Image (cartoon, rainbow, N blue to C red):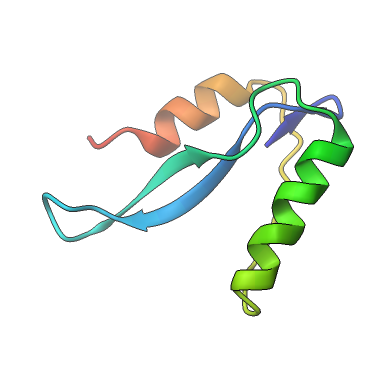
Length: 73
């Protein structure tokens, strides 16, 4: 997730321990990380998962999107 080209977060879909369903969680480089750090992180992930899907969202209100996406409500 980016906002105006600046890295905000990487999200990953994971299996929830409590309910047995899927949810989204933050992973990887911190907000504001440089493009080299983000691309290195994603390259490492791709080496372990050859079927990985990477989708970049450049949105105006990323923190709101992330909060709504990772909430368990």
